[in-house]
Amino acid sequence: MLPSSGKPKSSRKTLLSRVGSASLGTGSPSFKAASPSTDSKEELIRTIEAEILDGSLKPGARLDERALAVRFGISRTPVREALNRLATTGLVEIRRNIGMFVAALTLTEVLELYEAVAEIEMVATRLAVRRATIAQRQRILALAAEFQELADANDSEAFAAKNVMFHEIIYEASHNHYIAQLARQARRRVWAFRKVHFGMPGRMHTSAREHVALSAALDAGNEEEILRILYAHGNVRSEAFHDFRMILSFTLGDAPRSSRD
Image (cartoon, rainbow, N blue to C red; front, side, top):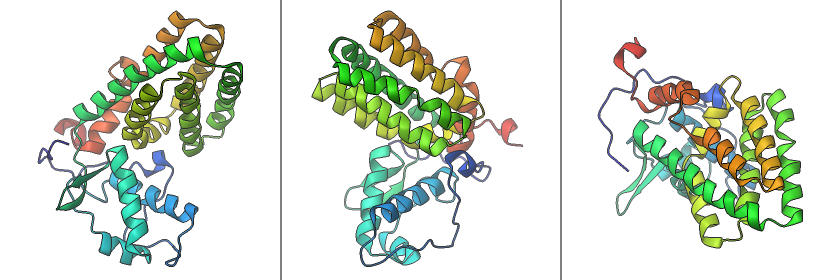
């Protein structure tokens, strides 16, 4: 990760409404200290993730396991597990023999991550066209049909989770362990930012249509159409992604000064 550029972060926009979580500020949710359930662990991850995205936890800030454990009323073990999980998404940076810190990603780095995900997924999907079993094709078609309902319900959290499931089946259908592993690792790095993206007005409905078209092209074996859809779906530097790039600029502290006033 690159070090923080030193730009002021005071003008960060609150994105919790886009992520689907509520900032807890200095308050604490109720976690069971003895043996946190899976749901509680996921809630802890979502809470820390949301506070990084809305600027409550500043880029470059040290994440003290002990302080977080006291705040949430749990042991340090689930806190450490949560921070390690967030490190796989790129939101947390592990500095060997020093500790864990909120990653100071730049807009350029995030866009490069998106490009990497798009290119790797193109390879995985092209292989899936040729290798997917009948059962995998049917599952992909079935999942694609579920996106519209989630978009209509404006449930960005569930939409993002369904999106992971959809692409996971495509990775499996590639029948290439190494490409699937690369795709998973790359996608985890942009997971939090995708949730922000899905929270933008109209984005889920557009994405729902793209998933239906992609699943139909995959089932038909139309590789040329698949590449066209994937390019539109993941080209983060296109005009269609302009508003998303601006939101990222504010989130990451890279927005032009005139846009902040």
